[in-house]
Image (cartoon, rainbow, N blue to C red; front, side, top):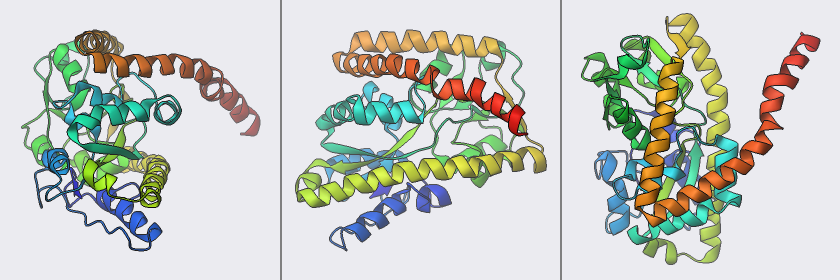
Amino acid sequence: MTTTWPAGLPFFQAGPGSATDFARRVEEMSNGRIRIRVYSAGELVPAFEGFDAASAGRQVQLNHGCAYYWANKSFAAQYFTTVPFGMTFQGHNAWLNEGGGYELYEEVYRPFNLVPLVVGCTGVQPVGWFRRPVESLADFRGLNIRMPGLAGDIYRAIGANPRLLPGGELFAALERGAIDAVEWVGPYSDRELGLHNAAKNYYSSGWHEPATSTEVVVNRAAWDSLPNDLKAIMRNCAAACNITSHTTLEARNADALDDLINNHGVNFRPLPDDVIKALLEATKDILTTQANRDPLVKKVHESYFKFKAKHDRWQANSETMFQTQIRDLGREILS
């Protein structure tokens, strides 16, 4: 199994939901009937060539990465990682597992001879690190920013220059000014890369990645060769990695953000309202245009947003109500 992650990223290489974690779980649960050898980005193939390598199935049978890295293969793939201004962990995973999302995921990847498995979720990501403060929409004109997938197209629409760089190159590029801003994952993973030593302006909240699922793609022929019990083990290991990666990052991000603010002089704040409004309008335009161009994109788009509308109504009367009303009242009483 290849990965899109360099060897120097402990969480993505060995943490919950990582390629190594998935491989370990599969070997343990199968009692050694499946053994997966993990290669970091660049060891067998470059970071963004694992999808094609797994598709071919000659040297590589699996790849660990994110679906939005393969937007050049299918625009629809990006919906399975995250959608700007879309659903968070609860809604995104509910759509995948109960709203037909997984079936569409498999349909999108079928022409590439791949079977997808969701193996992690980072949760809501910050906007990223900026060498200079952002005061208004004008500051994005000509800005060189590392941003993959659909969000990169949206930044381009408001005048920025999106760049796709692997994680292992981000610190050096930001430190020497080759790029003006970078987006990675969240406080814990960003601190692992040392991004706070290259810039101090850290912006939230991540309009661009409210969920961000990671995936393992399996070569179709290799998958079909497995008996049903081993397929079930693979799927259940993926599900376990998905929840443990999310809960681990929820805990570690809280500690890391406090550390970055209190001990490293990081300025953490939201983007200006005019920037968010412009990004939202660009998102609507791009999603609508792409859905009208491609029947499969339209099929995925309509499924996602139909489910989102239903889930948003429930969220408004459950999670959102608790966060904005019940929790605050409880804090007053219990403090």
